[in-house]
Amino acid sequence: MSRRRIGRWVLALLLLVAGVAGVAESQRRRGGRGGGVAIEPNVEYDGRFTFVRLRYPEYSAAGWAFDYPAMERNFMTIVQDLTTMRPHVRQSNVHAMDDPALGHYPIAYLSEPGYWAPTASEAAGLRAWLQKGGFLIVDDFLFNQWMQFERAMREVLPDARFIRLTVEHPIFDSFFTIRTLDEMHHPSSRDAAAEYYGVFEDNDPTKRLLVIVNYNNDIGDYMEWSGEGWYPVNLSNDAYKFATNYLIYGLTR
Image (cartoon, rainbow, N blue to C red; front, side, top):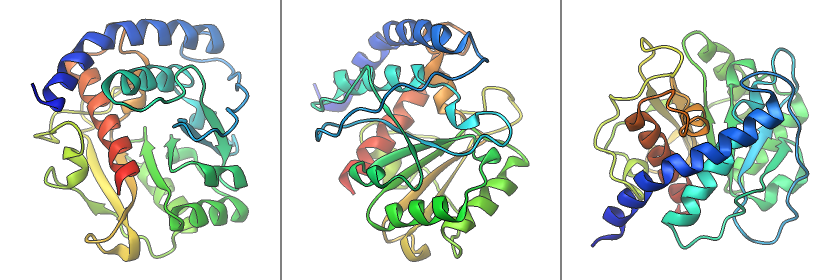
């Protein structure tokens, strides 16, 4: 049986277990879906894969922390069982964009960029990290929040072009074969059909993909609540597939 076929079966079997454990922890730390955020100490760098979430100033809500930490716990549980990687499963990191320690880690996740307004130092830090090989996953925003995200992203990469991706892009076939991009939507709005955009080195689609943008989507929320039955199983399943593909692509390109 192929690695991908085995992965599909394992993923389906693990979703419920991972989701239940993660939701319990999330509710304990956040008081359900709202409430304050208790940030855990960062993992000391040891070479193992560590899930990194980027933090930005809380001008409005703590959008950068939505789905923390249950989403990363659930996702790393899946990654541990699907791959030969040995990620930190019960621990993860939160870094400011201008934190020098961010340079230890190849992949980072940014949530709710519709509330993101980087300082000059944060923009410069994120720019340097991307140019040195970092791969950024942007998630959880919809509709008119794009305007603020684009404004913020141009503070980081002033000449950035946002190129809409099709299912033929290799990121959608790096571990799971995703055959369509037309089935997902933002969990808070069925009218928000998911779209996927890339920011490439030198704005050249033949060069390295620096940023993958999940617009009108929130794979983090689907993964956080995957064990609660709030969302259709196929959408939670797809969220893990997208996230796994992003991770494998970012580590191998």
